[in-house]
Length: 58
Image 1: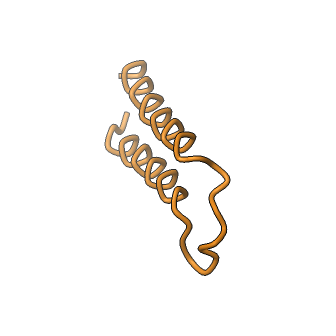
Image 2: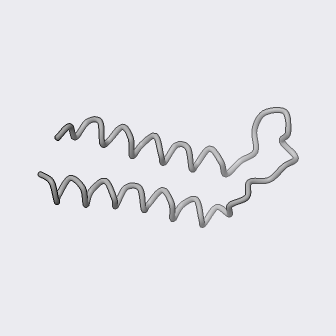
């Protein structure tokens, strides 16, 4: 199993979720549909899922 690829995927998910916290681009007045707590929880879930996959299939 390629641990580097799984790590990169987890980091990509975390960056995606964190990028949704602050509005960016042309429509900065529009807020994210998710609260900061929701995004933190989603990022933490991505990390935990990656760790579980590594432990289970290693």
